[in-house]
Length: 77
Image (cartoon, rainbow, N blue to C red; front, side):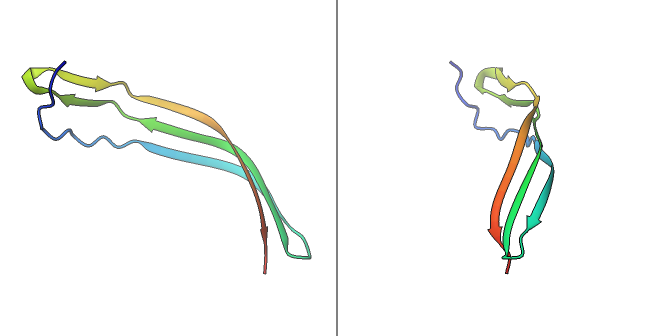
């Protein structure tokens, strides 16, 4: 097993994005019902770090999509 080189790995920034379509209904009494559906996208770029002795370790980039559901109950003043 290789030992860490104590060097700083370069910054690799990923992202998360969400898109939701829904409907909000406000009753005369003030009760609020809010619901929606959509998708969440997550992306992590490839990461690589150098190890002591000239070896390196890396991970593959990946992007995944997940379904999303939103349900809220509240009160409007």
